[in-house]
Amino acid sequence: MAKETKVWEIIREAGFEPIENKSIIVSYAPADLSDAIVKFLGVSTEFLVLQICREELVLIPFGKLDWGLKKDVALSIPFAEIIDVEIRELALNYRLTIKTKKDVITLSVQQKGLSTLRSSGILGGSLSEGNWHSENLDGTLQALQELQAGQD
Image (cartoon, rainbow, N blue to C red):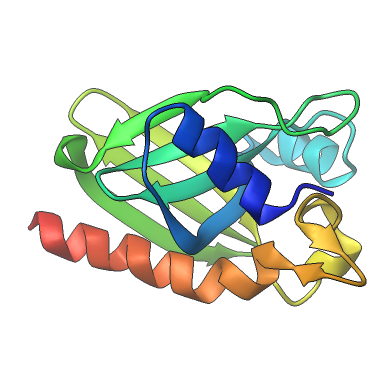
């Protein structure tokens, strides 16, 4: 649905410098098993694009009703504020935990194996153009881990 170039355009307009092919689709991680079931069934999930930029991580939301990409930045996390990044496999997703000096942000990232059939595949491309979430996933997760290594 949303082209990756549109993501970069919105981020540039907001004053950030996106790194190409370092964007994935995420959602806030469920609080418990009931919340996980509701989110898995797609009943109540807010999706965002996580984009690695030159000096920060940026989150841009999708609309809840039309799943169109919003033209505003929901959150910007400067690299200097990041204390720890943890990525672990959890069922059909990855759990991405970003600890900053002031907060802990826990996100859910759909694995690429089934992403074509899931929300990340729908939001991250089309059958004709490919799925940029899936194509970017390994490199983006690796960059997040390297970011953590660089903060030590």
